Amino acid sequence: MSDGMVRGVVAALFWASMVSLFVGIFRWEEPDVLAWFIGFGVLLGAAYAVRYWGRRQGGG
View 1: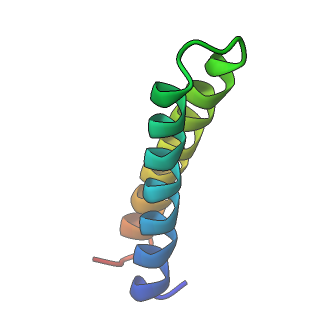
View 2: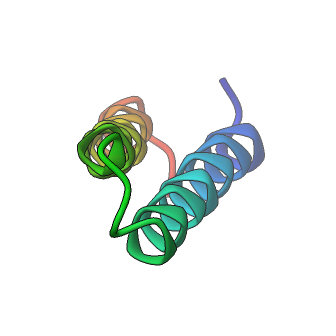
């Protein structure tokens, strides 16, 4: 995977996690709010995992 593609995937996962966080904050009163915060953690963790993998492969 090229360096630009890794950065694109990381950016997409990061911003998807931010959307999940904001939705969770604005839906605080609802019973399914925990799912949004779990999604936030999973997406953010995936972004850092892809970033780490890209660096291990010799990317920037």
